[in-house]
Length: 281
Image 1 (cartoon, rainbow, N blue to C red):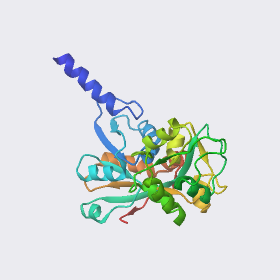
Image 2: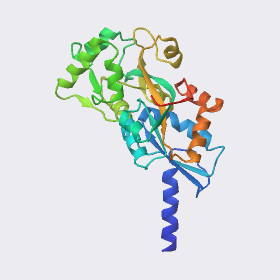
Image 3: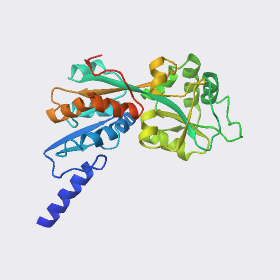
Image 4: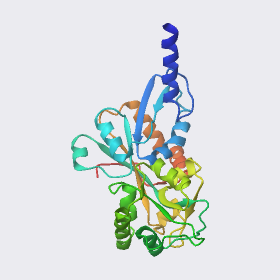
């Protein structure tokens, strides 16, 4: 029985460390984090670097719950920190959620590597989503990977132009469309679907080394610098959400994220770090 308990304890430690650099186990502190998938991808190199300075903390980051799911879990006491790609709702604020804007990453139009297109204009993207353009130039059928209507990626794409909003509504009305719920599901669907096209955060492309083609929009390649200049229009917010119950150990991690080293790591992985100041917007 004692051996079984020891084995089970070791398995728990391994699960908690599966997304982070290995450290001493058992740890004296545990931090639980979840939220937006592309933002969690940003967290992976940040956590790996942080654990080199604090080997006695165990950071658990499971499969992404999405921004709303992460905030809900935080307010229920199941998480210490949520990483969100949207602002807080009034009811979340009233329950004690506090938001700190961290930065933003480009929302990149992606295709499988087999798709041969070097640029898409807004009009061409509208025609693809509406179904007016059904094949790529080489004759391959286009398969659009959609996100749920209320997902932040859908809202960002829909805000690109009035025509894009209408095109996305048209896409949802067609039968047989692929709808991916989470960020990892979305980019995985683009990768495995012949002729697939969709969108994902640049953080995911860099950190996960995704085998996709990043397609420039209106001749502008996605990058943090292009976001900063206003040349690239599709930006996905990254914010840190906490409550008054967020423990000091998690606050130390957040301080590292806002430090020059943390900001440099985020920038290297596709983030335009815009602020470290607390806000309740």
